[in-house]
Image (cartoon, rainbow, N blue to C red; front, side):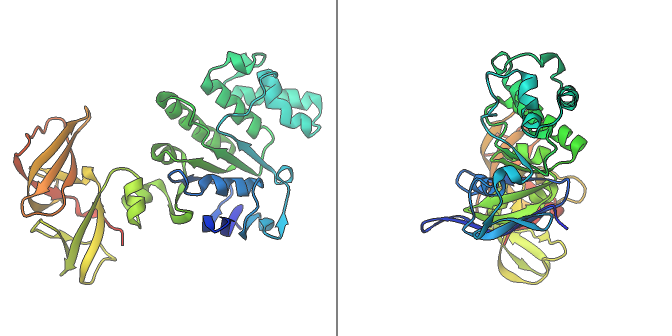
Length: 353
């Protein structure tokens, strides 16, 4: 049985459909991220799980028990969930220890047990020496740790996080994402995490649910989402890619403007006049390719950007067709207008229609 299940969940505001038939299941102890651009419905979905918004249709179940539907709604405080907000929402007039222990006090946990659990939790989030400080005396990352400790100390059935790292700078976001993953691995709370940041989602998630215009486009592991996207939106939203058009004949796909075919993988058999595929820039090679790569044809360089770790080239097929993005090693220096052969790893071509 799933720990948390969304069944055809919908939320309408008038004629506008904000969440449109989202269904997914979370296993006990799993961390699933709701990922998508602004306005895709991810935060509305999270707030329906928390009980702050009632669904227009569908149902939410925990351990098979319905907690939310248009006809029934368990109050947020009785759902056994903890939520961490974008703003942290820690009380400025309480010390770190008082903030962390607040949930236990509300639950009338004995004082001795509260003190012990607060001390243990502060040690887990590496804030033991800061127990008597106030939030104003902490950095943003430390305040986020306080919010995490306060949410986890009550041992929730489900932990909900709404864009918890958006107020931090890039380096601190990366550090805190790793910290959230470490804490999840230690406590194994069933967790729903909302973000619009693809890198953040890839770093912390067991699975990622990609939402677009209120609908669930794909839910899968980070590896499968990146390497085997099922729709053009997922392919383009999860990292950089080339969305290319071609035709399939005789077990090979031929891209517009490139004469040589790509051997197709299992599941794509059968001729078709049109096929759209996703090819990541690092799966294309200029000049020569590694073992297993196949040539596609001649291209000329029409744009380039040096990014330190690699060159980002834009190349135009000599016979026409859409330009392709290619990532190449820093040592491969090609000038604008220079011609080259382009190769592809056939195992990295993913059909998206």
